[in-house]
Length: 172
Picture 1 (cartoon, rainbow, N blue to C red):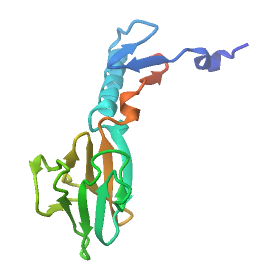
Picture 2 (picture 1 turned 120 degrees about the vertical axis):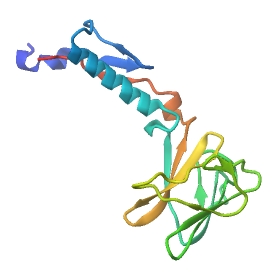
Picture 3 (picture 1 turned 45 degrees about the vertical axis):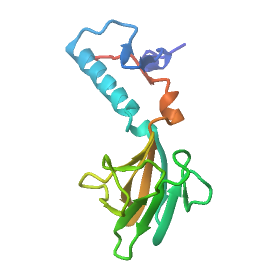
């Protein structure tokens, strides 16, 4: 027997899929509409081409040169992307510069670059974004150490995402 105080355990969760909120009871109250909108916004953020489901790596930089790419001969080996993306150089002063490999097709903040480009670190401002195909990265600092946060808009987590499970809205 189910205790009425714990009746929520017996309810089937609702599912939020591809922006559509499916719920056993028809939404109608302003509260239910607000909750549905919040859930849709969350799904939109998660599944965006730069959302959390695209996160595929965090790689801490070592002093000096850090070759980056999919090939195993790089210091920072990515799960996908160009074999040789380029080189991230961590200077003694903590600044990070990136030199794209000639054939990587890399864009730095939307512009092609051949010479080293200093990368802005994420935090309070907008970090410099380096992109090649579906793979991108930017520099963040964790525990006082610079790292590359790597994303892939074609990541399996994003492309095979089944949606979010929710319990039905209960205004009470």
